[in-house]
Image (cartoon, rainbow, N blue to C red; front, top):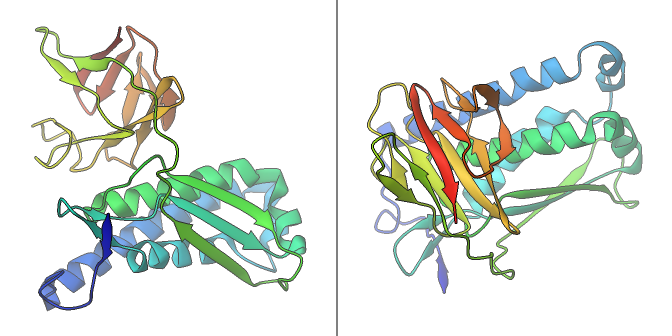
Length: 247
């Protein structure tokens, strides 16, 4: 059972300093999103984005929807919606087609990054669905956030193993990895970001998802943004390398 987070100071304490800090993180997330979009639309795609709906407009609204959709569960965790349906006009959707999958991946990454920076958790993996709606005009769009806990994830016996044999079990649909102690797998190393990465249970596999960390994630020496893991893979967070194992 979940209850809505209210605006009263008793539910979520807010100070001028915390609001300023949150606004700063919000801007950093959007700046990273905008920088990645610029690289995506260079060259052959650039002309398509000179008019009509701009992807960055969707990113800005998405961040606001994350904050507006906060809930507090019975354990006191602050949750954010993990599924987002985005509807745009047929004309705008047509322009997005050549880079649709990349755009969806970047929008999902923006959700995870903002949630990680503001201490929000998810009930399951983040999904973004982008489609056209015939009733929308060019330049307009709608976002419908929701919590999706209808599908129970498969139970997978998996863990991350240190060189000395210590095991960090991977439990639940999403396991967080980072430097702060509220992460499911906390790594006390300055090269690891506060909220560095997540491990998502997707069907019968586990995927590593980088959360826009400073020093990145590597699988078997190759830097990745999102990568399914196989038994025996070497996974590096900053300068720390662990081995992914599953029974």
